[in-house]
Image (cartoon, rainbow, N blue to C red; front, side, top):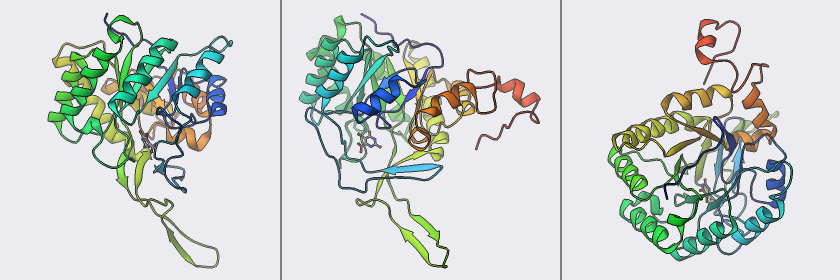
Length: 323
Ligand code: RRO
């Protein structure tokens, strides 16, 4: 069976890890304008993750050293089973980040059995130490081969996708595209946060005192937010090219990184993105961000506000600054 990840055109939803750890978070997403519900990346057992503080954002960027805090996969599947009949029924995507290959196989098979809409396999968590599996191409190949052969993926109509890290080497992108083609990966999400970043919260207080504080207990964390957009656009562009060379047009590419307004999505479409995940902007603004992006904060016509060419012809009318 060839797997297809076919959401409605231009679907926008949350990035794994953002507003999706608790069951209340999932309910908020369910009753928002998000086009799908993605869970926090989950493990076999619940985890508290890394010591706090482990998340910080300002109005532009975020940094996290979360460490896979999650409820355990059973709670997320339970939520799915209990809520699939509500009026706002939405595609439910389980983000899976098991701590071993065996754990991933177990969770993915259980997700298939439960009938989730899709599974996004996250082998790119930046906060666990060591080399993430998806940065080691041979390991990635081995993982997918094992998952495909040890689950009933080939016979079940549920797409499997990959949350990818940032690849700074074109050769890696070519090889990952070959893996996508070989194992019928239905979508790729570009990209996870930028690992090992340091952000200081620096300001001068009213009484003139300088404060330069690292907001994370673990010092370093994964960077998200507006700075990620150029990186992510480059990843999407290169993956679209690499997939085209393999005549693979069915793998969907999901843009994840730096989206806070409709223009960001339009830029993503220009390099080959199909759907869009919102991370830091969701943390900052809450679930109203989906409506803002879809319909435009300037009362534009949507989806994503006016057509970009139209806007370029009429730059005075609409704010076209894209940061
Ligand atoms: O939980 C995390 O620390 C985390 C994960 Br699993 C991930 O994939 N990306 C990220 O920035 N943080």
